[in-house]
Image (cartoon, rainbow, N blue to C red; front, side, top):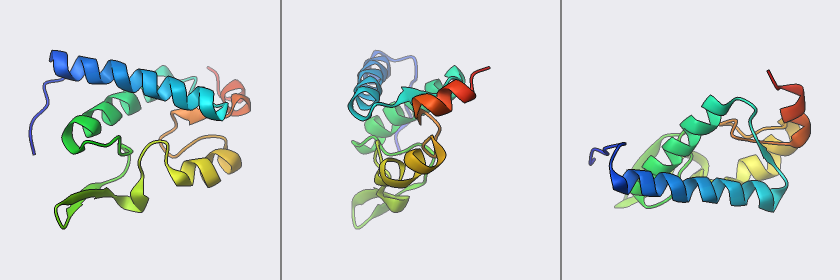
Length: 111
């Protein structure tokens, strides 16, 4: 696996693209970011890193493995993942990683 320099221009550009991507996801689904900025920052960095390593924005909270020359993650967790869209956010108010939340969840979990 290649090492990623998190201060490189390449990573910073991918980080910026990933931030735009997560903004778009929020808008598309009517979600908001977690009120805890550290959660969002960590997940966005993980998504950017996975995009650079594997070519897809695999959820950073689940293992990614190589099967028959292709990268796969547990439950095929590519952001925004199906379990988050169908179960986690409607039922719990947030996705497993915690970055995407319902506005109601975010209001009740503000610091």
